[in-house]
Length: 451
Image (cartoon, rainbow, N blue to C red; front, side, top):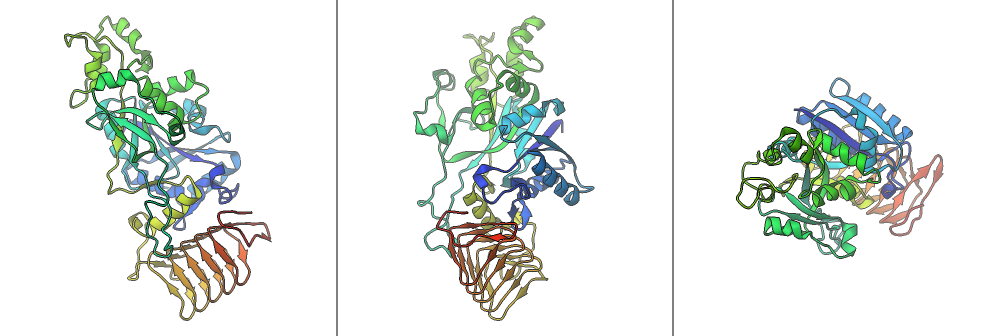
């Protein structure tokens, strides 16, 4: 397909401190003992997309990510790793690599997206409507666990997701309004011109922007050039395109629409650009004059692809999301893990060792070379590679990364233990993040805090 694919892999996200570091950038955070970036790359590979640009913020992070990709996808993918400065934002990252973009359209995917939605569905919708941008949206995930904790049941009243307001036309094909969670603290205003043009609008608060976009390249580059203060695709570029779609002065096929019409000596050029949709849309109606003949307005189309509720679609953009996704990928979304589950509905590596009367429950994972002592219990948790866990240890709803040592009698609930950490005997943790720096060990942490 005539699409270039760009994966925005981030760097060392502040939202994920202390889990990320120069040695473990965001793209390499483990989900079921696999880097989160692998989930995006394998979905693209399944769609027969072999040539990619992976954009990483910061030279150290880019070196780590590039080294991992070279080892994991040798002879499978052709990946160019592009390094951009830290904290440039998603729009800034695309601006920095704009000289590499040459195709008619660009598919931009967030490297933290864990999903089974085929990217080809988004690109097909984009081409079908000849859109300026097509954004994939999906249901807002329910975050957090119920008070029962060990059951792993999602509690929809305890921690609802942060909502966006998304407005669509009645056919649910065109994006007419979008306001992010941060904007909802203020009044949400909808343009009168949009309401007049469409007649009615479907307003949804149960959907989110999944950070998978198909862009018309020339339009995207024009916006990035003209709006040099834009940093975010979600908060700046996409809302701008949506707001301006009924009065577009944006480039289409290399020239402003008004200029293109004038140069061709035919005022109907703008309408022909929009005429490929399978059914008439408000764009066509708005572009035509009173008699349905000559266009009186210039427009462009902003479209949406709505992922089915049966599909899994969550971004790893917070510590809570990190824990939720790890549980989901060894639980209800285990088809994404790439592993074969046992009759007990768990994953225990053949090289792992279990002590006497130790139980590893359903929806759990025990990595390569890890050892557990006697009378341990693991419930709805992921334990990484080459961990050493003593006797009488309880691990519930937690993620334990690689090369972790846990002493006898420890209790760990709702926590993340980073690689190489060491816990002494009888440490009790709940809702914590534990990390180790060099040989220093951090232990007793208050709820929802870290050192």
